[in-house]
Image (cartoon, rainbow, N blue to C red):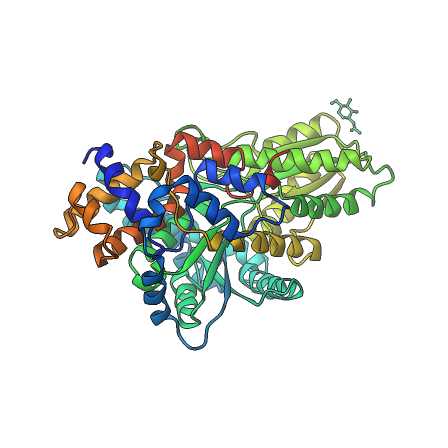
Length: 497
Ligand SMILES: *[C@@H]1O[C@H](CO)[C@@H](O)[C@H](O)[C@H]1NC(C)=O
């Protein structure tokens, strides 16, 4: 179907409030950015948009809200916060199945589509061969990953912090590769009748392989579920330069630097989780740029506080034969040692909870390498964990996002702007699956009279496309990519320097 037809068809459908997810075209985001800190309410924004889009008056929101009201269970949670994280094995026996889940994720091991059937067998082989070494690693840190325990505690702390702000919220942990899985979290969310859902990846920087993978899975599940499609949901794709996060990280670094005779003496060594280079170069993954932005923001904060330390950013955890982001952490440690650096404060920058990459890889392997390279004054900054200023900043991020859950889906298509291919693909797929759906001017007319199940189905799909747009597939779309890269999604006002 030509995209011009999609444009013709879509405008009236997009106006239905049946789907609650949020699409953030650059202009809307910018518009919100300009009202940051002012007393603009969602209602005000709504009016402004209605004025800009005359078709909006044709939609009948009351019918759809009535329909939605029927689904609301008696007992319901107003605000749900879904925390996304990687997950880790809870016992040594589960290391191998955990690795299997990890390596069978097509966002992690990307095969050409004609080979996609091979993902499972390949994951089986890789997890089999890597399990013994990985089990040793987990054995060294106590036999399991502490990530879930920390994430659950972070969730409770976040609830408490939100409660202090007058927001009754409940957190739900959704791990990508181990229990509790995304399915389990969504089941709980549905059982609780969550009214507004904020999806918060616990990865400060967005990557296709981390937040992107979780969001993509979530998107698929929303697609498949009528009830979920009606939930008002908003995603915070990344928060890599939020002032509170940067300040908390800078504070932890200062506390370590202050333990040296000259606080500006140690080299501050940021170690980010690595990624195959092709993610950045071929897929346009914003991870590297966002990681550099975090380091830049933390260092300017430290400079303002009088810390003049040299610093380096390197990427750890490389596996496999392909080239990853450089410089590699081990290479950098060797170079710094050779250049005479003796004191080093290491900062894990992609993690907000301790797990094997901090406790084993940094604290054991890299620390040992550093000693061999003559770096005698080695310390590591802890992961942010339950630091109150960090948790409070996450709470603030959630609070700031809540008005956006009240937004109706809004699309570039509505305004005739170029859109991601995904939107069009979706419609094409729908057509092949459901013969009753008609595209073209006829549907355009029919839609004006009321909400049909098919229109609702399309709306749900478009709504969930918004999550995709704000995450994974947006990398193919120039506009939204630059939005993510420049941090305009969705906290434009906080990302910009
Ligand atoms: C920082 O790096 C510069 C250039 O490599 C070096 O001359 C200087 O001594 C370093 N400063 C500290 C405190 O290590």
